Every structure is written in C-alpha cells, then in structure tokens.
Image (tube, rainbow, N blue to C red; front, side, top):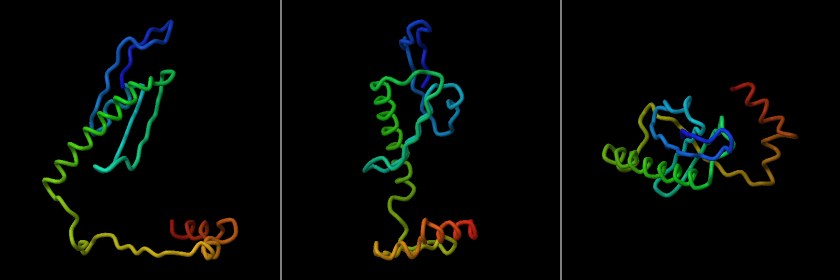
Length: 125
C-alpha cells in the first residue's frame, strides 16, 4: 500500500494497493500485507503497518479482497498442474503420524511447567 497523505491533517489524498508475489513493494509502502489460504478461507495473515497512523477500514477491506482474488488466480494455476493430492507420498516426502493424547495424560508428556517438552526441543532443535 502506497499512501499520499496531507502532512498537516494526516488525511489520505490518494492511495495505491500493489500486489505481487516477490515482496518488491515491502520497502516502499506503509502496509506490508500477506495472506494465504484455500478456496474455503484464510489460513494465515500477516500485516505490518509502518510510517503512517493506521489504515482506514475501507482500504484494508480492498486489500483483503484483492488478496482473495489473487489467491484464487494462483490456485487456478496450481489446479492446472495438479488438481488433487497424490494418492501416496513420494519416497523422499516427509513422514508423519498423528496420535490423540487424552487431556488427562498431556501433563505427563509436557512435564511440570513444560519442562519435558522444552528439554526435548533443546535436544532436537
């Protein structure tokens, strides 16, 4: 987002929302806005506002809508290459397993005050 505002009143006289995938506008604008998601909704959002005293809601809403439209275009291109997940992981793909831990046993895994989990993180990174 690039703003031209009145230095005396702070009122926005004109603005331009820039959209790209490489982040070139990050250094120039007053709002760095990133949004990711699927066709069903937003999965993550990050906003940095710098060099101005806030963004009016209507401009922010416009940025959200532009982000949605851009995300759909990227998803359309991805669907042309591969429209559904592979039935099996590649041999060198990540391996994972999901387990359910009953709430009454979670303290045993975490340790008092999270001691066990913090030591595990220290040991394994």
